[in-house]
Length: 403
Image 1 (tube, one colour):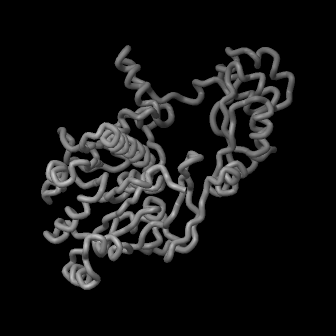
Image 2 (tube, helix red, strand yellow; image 1 turned 180 degrees about the vertical axis):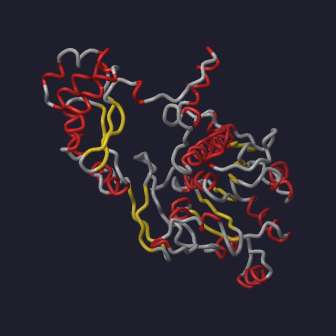
Image 3 (tube, helix red, strand yellow; image 1 turned 30 degrees about the vertical axis):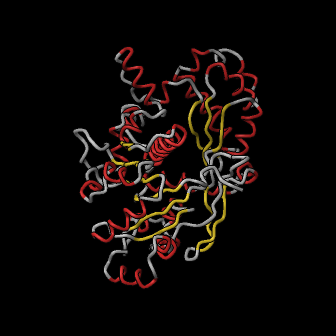
């Protein structure tokens, strides 16, 4: 069955996380993505892991394997004149080019959009960088933590009167990569349906975070309206119970405040909780009553039950609640198993590995993994052969450090 992007050709000149995840989203929907890596070492994510049994191997990095499914892989040295000439030949036959070098790098090689667009007028080129292709911060270096901090949301994350904290490692980069994929594909389909030429899409990782729907838009609008700065709040300022709590075998989370209090009483099974003072909103904000509730009912209830038992009883009481799943819990979750949310992929070096699937199901053009992440330079013969290079040519180019 054809996939949604089966007729799209993409040249992937990205590395680490944000760029490769952007192009992975296209490859997993059927796009013909050719990933270009530096001869010898390849994408630095090959060395980032995690690795099976903590033994580093460039072909066994779980991060690289996940970020590069369904791609073909070639090696090419763009610091060489011959390498840049081969790259120009590759650009002539693609719809999309995605690169994630420091701004100015492509221009320094004579491979900027203005030059490449003259060779391939339909080309859509996406440039992913920390702060965009121009502006005062253009040449600044950054990390996931730096970008999350500068994007504005870290200020509101964390505990009251404590230092701010960020989301889990690299979450910001994955979110930014998703936005980049939307922008690039939007430019591609806009050009395709209008009949006009391609365009250059400038993606600033900081700006994708600054305008994220993860509270930032709400916070920005609130500030524009009334100058209000969002602050970190204490869970003690919320009515109880709300948050994550320890139970018999892990943690259980719920939000059961205010009008949902009757559900709490039903879950615990004590009719006294349905009467004043417990049933009043005033009591549910009073630290004195909160401490008594926790000691007398809540913690004894939780300590005698597993997180799945708490969840089942909370659901029966009509509460918004959930177990705090570990990775192992997710891998054996009956709902995810029925929806086939994980797929097994065979890799020639790493072996059979279970991968996360797509968060959507397409009935007509399904998401699927047709090939594992490529070995370093695995498709040199296939890709360069289509350009007319013979096996002898490739041997010579390899000896010269071009591929």
